[in-house]
Structure formats: C-alpha cells, structure tokens
Length: 383
Image (cartoon, rainbow, N blue to C red; front, side):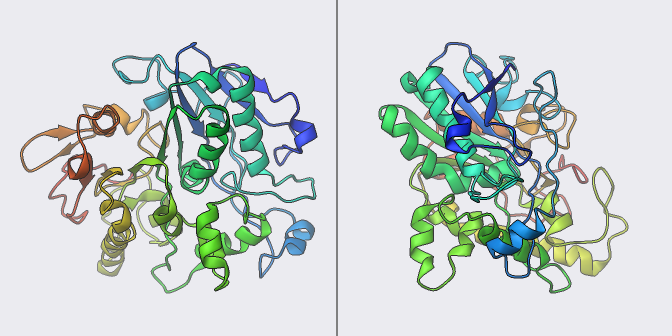
C-alpha cells in the first residue's frame, strides 16, 4: 500500500516517537466502504515509579519496543491479508473496500505528552490521520467505516472507538460506523505468582502517556472522582461505556497475555504444553475463566457480536504470529458447534455485519476449557 504523510501534521504536533510526521498507508479503491486498521505491535511503557509525567520525560520511554509493522513495500505484518485482503476468497465482503493502515504509536493511540522527543502523541497522530482521510481522500462520503486493530491496536480500538466516531460524524453523520477490536481485551490481572507487573506498567503509562483525554471519556469521567480513571486504559473497564456499534474478537486464552500478564513460564509459540506443571495448567484455565467473566458485559449486550474461542492464540482478523490470518483458514482454524455447523472469524463477522444474525445468534463464546480440547479440536497448541 502507498504511504501518505499528513500535510499539516507538524502544525498539529502529530509526530511519531522518532519525530516523523503522522502518516498512513492507503489502498484507495474508490469504494464507499472503508476499513481503517490501527497497527499493533506492543507499547513503550512509561518509566517512573508512579507514572508521573516528569518521570516519563526524564526517564524516556521504556518497555515494549515499537516493531516495524509496515515494511518498505507497504506490507502489513506478514501481508495485508484477512480483513485487509483484496482477495474475494479470503475476504468476500470487504475485498473491494478502501484499506487504511495507521502505524503503531506505542500508546494504543491515546498518548498526548507535550514535550519531546521522543514524541508520545498517539492521540494526535490518530486524529490527524482520520481528519486527512475525511478531508482529502473521500472518507467524508463513505457509507460504511470499520475501525479495527489487533493486539495493542485492538486495545486502541476499544479505547478510541467513540472518540473516532465523534470525529467521523462531524464530517459524515450518515455513515455506518463500526468498531472491530481484535485481541485487545488485555486484562487487569495478576500473574500466577501473585504479582501485577504488567498491570502496573499500564497504570503508570496511563499517567506517563497523558492518556486522560485519549481514552473513552465516559469511562474517565465516571471513575475520576474515585481516583480510578487509570482503569480506563484497560478494555474491560472501557467496554461497558462504548456506545458505537461493535463486534469483539478475542481468544479466551490469549497467547500474549498467557506469556506476559499471567507469566505462565512454560511452553510458548508453536510449542506443546507438555512441560507445564499442574499448577501452571490450573492457572491457564483460570485465566480463560476470568476472561469470560471480564467479557460478561459484552456477552450480555445483544447489540454486540462476538467470536471468542477457547484457544491459545492472539489476533484473528489479520496475520500476526501465524503464516496466514486466522480470519479464514479452512485447513487449520474453525469452531465446530454442537449442531455440527462450522464457523470462522470471517464468516461469523460477515453474517453479523450483513444482518444475517442478531442477538445471541451473533455470539460465539466457547464455554469449554482449553484442555482437553473438547469443543475445538483444531485449536493450535500455541500460536
């Protein structure tokens, strides 16, 4: 996909951490439908014991590195596949749509720190790109817009869903606007030893990134009086406040979370679970149960669609740790329900988006534990 730089990015102070101006990759087909993807790839967590901005500025950005999610040829992750594909077999409903890829900012597009470099301004980058698309590339006349993202971009989709909706509606109030967060429901959860290192990093970074104005404002206002607005950096706390149309994709045993939040300490990508102890397996199963509980507000909302399998995997809408996207992979990835019908992320989302299913029929939330693989024998070992 060709790369485009927002012409007035400097005037808006919309810079990436390295000082480059807000930019995006665009496959402009001229269609009235748009898929806008927020890149995943991790975070640059704020330093400092309490996450205060002065600690952040003096210590710099530490923690998760920013990965080069888009290569020089404009390829997304391992390829612009899944919901970003122009292949009608892989992506029958959206293959002709305009596709946008917004590179990673390190703050799930919520940061807005005045000082720099490094520039921690994910909110400004996202706002500048969306406005440029509306003003100069035809998104103001779109009939359909899907905001999506995977991993840290999936978290961004939750956190910024309504903020982007408000921005879009100012120029295009009639477009159908939908949020599709993928693998972004990172839990505020202790590790299997009782620590909370990752949750604390997110809490510190909420303040260090100055994310107060970047995340869901209804959540922030509701929790601010109790001094708990930092919780609005977690999808589980933001989700009940989201007003926009939404479909959630989330593996119940998210592989990144099992490794980094739970810190299970055994197995790993493309490896069996044979080295895991009984205690580690018990912690794994409890994490999946806790994810179901955290997703309960979504499950109870008849307007929200869901695809949440009991698998140890990460993103589903685009390629991530996998050779091809789990979005539609007939030879390797599906869910077989009790009535012997086969579902994939693609077919489930497409049926929901086209209105073929509504209410509970649009939700696929597996209730079985990961081990043994009683309700999805095609779950990968760990991907």
